[in-house]
Image (cartoon, rainbow, N blue to C red):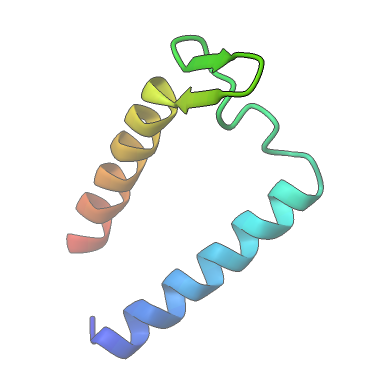
Length: 68
């Protein structure tokens, strides 16, 4: 797959993800059990551990499928 085609597919995927997020279908994103959130009086700390693991696994599977 050429670089141009890959960039086009990445752009299409980002648009689809943006539309799904805007429609409220990705409300679970960043709110999975295991994501660390701390909200103090003047501080907010957010560390989405489990969400990043899920995204990593999905991207790894997608890349493995695309290489075949």
